[in-house]
Length: 172
Image (cartoon, rainbow, N blue to C red; front, side):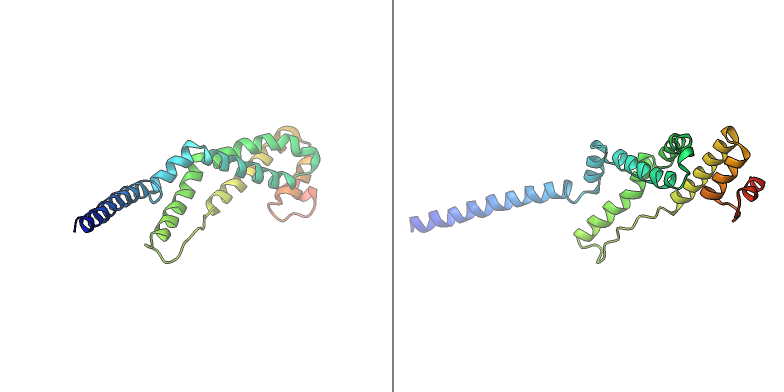
């Protein structure tokens, strides 16, 4: 009888210790792994938003500058970088990524059946194009001849569908 009591007592202690362990683990999981604020803090502390912002700026600048004739790239590239950094601020990137964190965690804890990982950048695209046109226009007015201005306008912006540099000169 004494041995049976010791075995039952052993199972009771094991069950109690496992229960306490799982309760603590569950509490830690809810306060870290399943908590969106935990991910936001980690991303912020590790400057992930800044890194993403810098990568986007570099990529978009390269794509926009690729369309500019080689002789004019140095004039426009630095200004484009500065303008794009204003558009793709770390705070703006954070605003765009926060819903992804929420959607992912809601999917993981079965609040949603589907996971939505789309990011709408259409508002930023509009800002980028407006900045690119503004920079090109300013650079053209400041430092280029009419013929050079028309060439950039025709190749890079082509605002009114002009076909020759003379038409573009007349447009700008």
